[in-house]
Length: 468
Image (cartoon, rainbow, N blue to C red; front, side, top):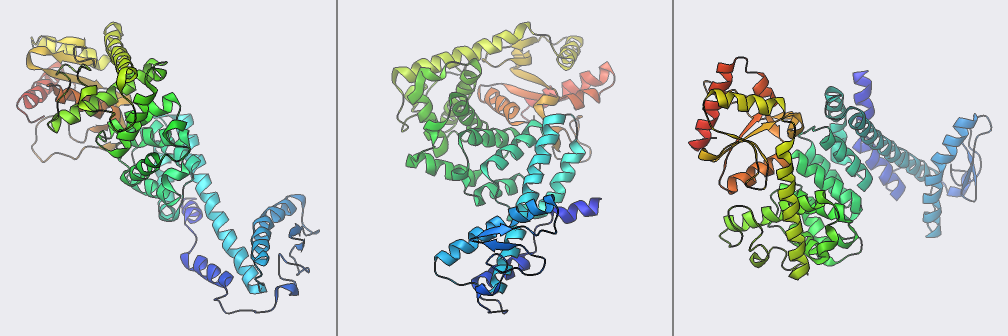
């Protein structure tokens, strides 16, 4: 079955495609008989094949209903192709028509394989989420890998496939190939508004920056072409600027243009708190990047003071009182969300870390929201933020490189955090905190209380010493 699956997913032989295309162009040797002689798709009735009258296929009377339907569907593209060629005054030989049929069949077969791949991937993710079908998804990616260099993913196919991977937290080294397949199909021009936000969110979640696609998006948005930024709904626009921020692209043309649209709309984007939180995180990323580059603006507690003066959103046709009101609302939503987590039920990992720190006689705070972000366990005296990363925070497939033999700690081969978790840690570091990420797998691997205390002592020590 495995061999049969790989045979199905293999792309058409390039030599077959080239030969068929050359034959249609008249370069291949063969029968040069005129097309009125009864070639399939033009007239007459060759044995076993359908007749055509005025470009419409007549199914073989000996075939069953299902076969007749398949024959009619198969003849439609060929009849349309022949009709267009004949309208241009070109006469096709029987050999050229047969070559055209073969070329269309090969391309349609490749399209069916591509559609089957996307549908299977989406179905596995929709049903299994991030908990089930990891091996099945990986096998599907492996058997599809040989075909990817030749594929042109439509906007729907790209959005569905990438959403499926991000929803399953399934990182794959094939992400650059999937991006290339989108670019080959037209890149930004092939994506509708909802598809743009889905593709961007998926790449950001899985930690891939689609540089070629971003350049195309910036060119399209900058040209003012229809279907650009103004076609994005509020949630889609906030997802796009958030995704660019997660990728660390706040200094890019794509972000500048998207942020300009955010400022232009102003308070119209303030309907949903989740959208406001995304907008604030994007604004914070932009401000912190400016500060890293020597720019001014903002204060070290993450407030919005000075953000507009630093030029975030300049050049995009926005700003002013409307943008200021939006940023104030976004900051308030962000702070409110962080504060609301103080009364939540803490995870077992969070409680376990707090209990270990108590045993170590280390003063700590659960759900410290002094930065706006809610830190799972903070040690304010050391400016250390400990994040207990459960399964929803990390990739289920990507691992950190193994440390060299003899390295201390239990972080060998730890799961890599997803995009949102990486951005949070990046922001906390830029706000002056030392971040220690502890994954659920690392914590579960520690048995005794003594082992947990030793692990935390080592990780905190390395963070304070600048080695974390």
